Length: 313
Ligand SMILES: NC(=O)c1ccc[n+]([C@@H]2O[C@H](COP(=O)([O-])OP(=O)(O)OC[C@H]3O[C@@H](n4cnc5c(N)ncnc54)[C@H](OP(=O)(O)O)[C@@H]3O)[C@@H](O)[C@H]2O)c1
Image 1: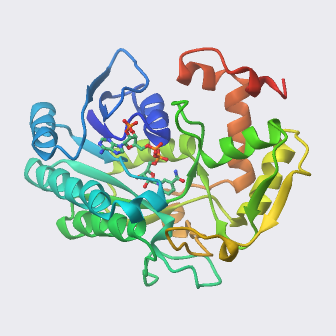
Image 2 (image 1 turned 180 degrees about the vertical axis):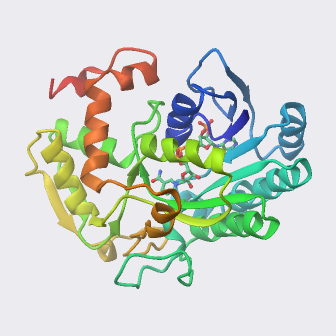
C-alpha cells in the first residue's frame, strides 16, 4: 500500500516510518527530513502551502494518509491561533476531501486535551467536549471534518517517545535530562494523563490500516497517572535519583494557554474492537528504556548517542 505521513519528521512520524516501512511504501513529509529507508520517499514543504499539499496528494495518490503534523506547543497555538487553525483544520479539509474523491483512508491523530478536565473518571468517546485552548479547539475542528466526511478514523491520544531531532525534547526526555544533569524539576501533581508509547501506537495503526476502522476512538495506556508520579516512575525505571523532582500545581503556573486537569482516556472501545490489551504508563516507560538499551534510539538518530544519555550505562 502507498501510505502518506504528514509530520513524518516528528516523534510519532518517526515511529510510524520505522513500523510501517517494513510492509508498505511510505511517502513522508515534514518541513525537515526525518529517517530514511529504501522505500521511504521524502518531500519537504510547509503544509500551509495548500497548493503544494494538493499537488503532493495528487502526485502520490496514496491509499492511506496518516495526518500527524501539528503545532504541539500549546502556548504557541494561543499566540498564533490563525496558524494553528490552518494546520489542524484547513490541511485536514484538503486531505479529507482528496481521500473522499479517491476512496482512500484517513487516520487523523488528535489529542486527549479536547475536554475541560472536570470529569473525575477516564473520558469516553461520547463524553461532551469542551476544549480550553486554541490547540485543542483547532484539533477538534480537524476531527469534525474527518468524522463528517466519513473518510477514516480519529484517534484521541497522548503519546511519549524519543525525539529524532535534537531541537525537540519530549516530556520524558525533558525529565531524564533534568534528572541526569541534577536540575530541580517541578511536575504537576494535579494533571493526569494516560500516555501510550509511540511505537505501540504505531503497531496499532498498522492494524487499523488493514481493518479500515472508521469513527472516533481513544487510544491510550491503561490507567491514568499524574505528571508528578510519571516523573517518579521515570526515575525508578531508569534507576536515577528522584530527589530533584518537586510537586507543584498547574494552578500556580502563569501559562498562556489554560489546560485541563484530567486528560485520562478510556481505551475500552478500541480495546474491545481490536481484541487488544494495552499496557500501563509504566510499560510505556519500560519500552523507552528498552529502546535506548537496544540501540534503537541511535538507529533513529542515525548516529551514536550524546554522552549525557550514557549516564545510566
Ligand atoms: N506529543 C504529545 O504529547 C501529544 C499528545 C497528544 C496528541 N498528540 C498529537 O500527536 C501528533 C504527533 O505529535 P508529535 O509529538 O509527533 O509532534 P512533533 O514531534 O512535534 O512533530 C510535529 C510534526 O509536524 C510537522 N509540522 C509542524 N508544522 C508544520 C508545517 N507548518 N508544515 C509541515 N509540517 C509541519 C513537524 O515538521 P518539522 O519537523 O519539519 O517541524 C513535525 O514533523 C500530533 O497530531 C499531536 O497533536 C501529541
